[in-house]
Structure formats: C-alpha cells, structure tokens
Length: 237
Image (cartoon, rainbow, N blue to C red; front, top):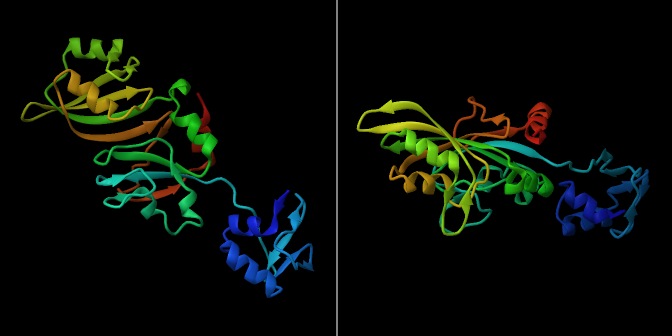
C-alpha cells in the first residue's frame, strides 16, 4: 500500500505540496469519492482521479540515448553538460540514471532508465554483458596485440577479462579503426587497454550493449524509448 500523495507525486501529477493543494481543493477522488487526506493509503485496485482524469502509476522507463562528446554520465555537474539535460521533457527526469558510464569524450549507446535493478543487471561485471566499441587509434594492430587482448590485461587496480579486437579499416597517417568487445566497463578501460600496447585511442564510440545495437537513425543528443523487443534483447544472455 502506498500513500495517496506519494502515488500522485510519483505519477507526475505534481510535487507533494502541489498534490496536497489539489486535495484541499477537492480535485482528487479515490473510487469516485472526494479525498480529504493526503495520507490515505491506496489498495492495488483503487482508481484515482484528478479533475476526473484517471491517474496511472508510472512504469519503469527505458531509453536508448546517443551520447554526444562533451557530455558526462553523472546526474549533476557544475562545469559540464550531463545526460539528464537531454531528458528534461520527461516526467520526473531527475529519477533517471545511466546504466553504466561513458567518458566525457566517448560517444554512442547509453541506456537510460529509472529501473535500478535493471542497471545492476547491465553493468555488474559478474553479469558478463558484452559491450562493443569502435575505436580510432594511432597505429595498427599486430597479431601480438590481438593475442594480448585475448589473454586479458593486468592493471594496478583490476585485471581486464579477455577481449576480442578486429581491424575495421586502415586510415592515413598510420591510424586504424578497431572494433573491440569487452565484458566489464571499468573506468577508461578501453583507452587503458590500447595505451598498454602503445596505440592510444583518438576517438571512441559505443556501438552495442549485449544484443542491443545503437539505432543509426538517432543523431548525437537524440534518444527514444526502447521497444519491447529491444528490452528483451538486453535481458537475454
């Protein structure tokens, strides 16, 4: 059971103070009865109306976001743009979180949701959810480099699990486009792995999480809700 004022606030009707004002103005009904107290407890089958409009509880929300460069995945920052600034038209946008982080200058697929358990399922290393990135690097991959990625790499603070890499394109000025698949997502992990072989990352773009690919129709800074099928893809191992 949930308090009426909390239910209405969580459903986007307004703040707790605004909800109490609506109740005082006799604009809120439960099962067609005018409510007098914001403390009233609701049962699962109760029907709540505000100005005769039925209010439904918000369900969990899941979005695909094409993160631009220069945007951080924290919810608040005094100096930089955050991903939340792109979601301000969503009801209770402040409750949204990113399922895993992307560096400020890394672009591409970011899952945004208010489902905390789902976030855990996506980002926890034990879940072994693959993340596929496209990196432009200085230099070209050798067979020894590929083998080193495949063995896993030791860092001071963690050991990277075996990763797969393949060369997508060779560019002028001894640069390459590489596709790399990792299963963790530690801080600066991809950049640190390439740095370890002496081939620093110039740009980094996330293409895929699990079986979910970034929608090519989404421009940087755009987002959309995940379809039911896409949500199933994310939850499928």
